[in-house]
Image: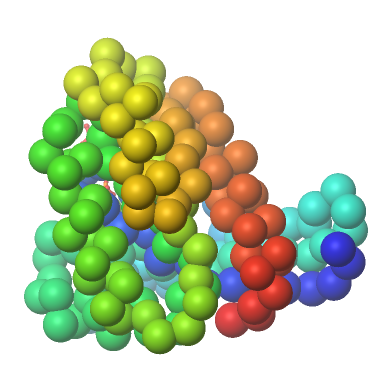
Length: 173
Ligand code: G3D
Ligand code: MG
């Protein structure tokens, strides 16, 4: 599929699961930094061209959930077409919190959107198994991927996979 696409993607999850690390890994050198301190979100941009020639422009919102009231966070989600839910495989609480994040997102976005469930910190010994992750993803209609922001395993693949899903969805916001 040829063309030019711009998508807003929100990255959510509990404190210290690796949201900022994953985004930093992916965005690397080609990024624009726009820290909205008053908003409590950091917005970064990553542009690349797929092998097919499709140009992708991802506007990635790194949401500092723990610092904000739910009401404030909800304002960020509105126009997102993709959501990345991150948990830390060594912290069961962060896995169990995914449902809460999902409920918050689903009740905040009116238009169609795609969801990616990211099991991060796979360079460490997991407490939450792959099977548990896959099962939850299936139940909540999410695509599942296992990453390590530390070794960079699957990080690029994760964001690019979501972008592909968004191109297929056919939205452009
Ligand atoms: P957050 O943005 O979700 O709050 P951060 O999380 O990206 O700030 O990461 C929190 C801590 O986890 C950081 O450690 C970071 O280096 C670490 N981390 C992130 N991803 C990984 C990973 O894949 N593997 C490992 N082993 N650690 C990871 P510090 O010590 O700086 O607080
Ligand atoms: Mg962070």
